[in-house]
Amino acid sequence: MTTTEWITDIALLLIVFRQLREGRLELRTFLLPLGIVAFVAYSYLDTIPTAGNDLVLIGVLVAVGAALGIAGGVYTRVRTDGEHILIKAGAVAAVLWVVGMGARMGFQLWVEHGGGSADVARFSAAHQITSDKAWVAAFVLMALTEVVTRLATIFIRSRSHAVARPAPVLSRTV
Image (cartoon, rainbow, N blue to C red; front, side):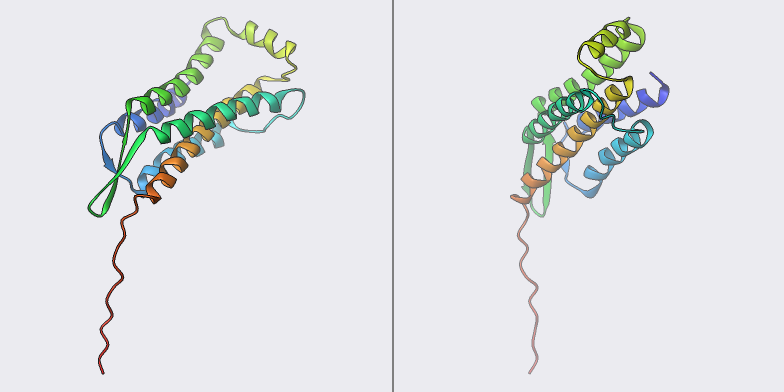
């Protein structure tokens, strides 16, 4: 793994660990993780292979990312305090995030340094996965989907906690 890959993976992990402490739901809450995965997608997602069973692999990992993201959003506490909406990732949300990130990192380390490349090549051949680009696309899209669905779930849940603000009173002079 390159230094950039380590930094982006650790940054994504730290985002959820930061949310173990309750904080305001702000635009930054959404933009920071979206910016990181957008950078990763831009850096690593050259193409989405469609030959053989590449789309099946991508679809399965995207579905896993969606499940992890939705569950992580559900297990993030959302509440109001005065005029602010506060969020706090629960232990389950943090564990799910680490599982998703850890699986991607572990797979990459296993393939690059643990002798897993031959096993992945055999699996790919047996299941008609045409190239390593399919694996890259699948894992990048899994991460992107996990982040987007988690944030979308938190956003949707926060709407039910939206603070009702009274309409401004307009004075009318006669």
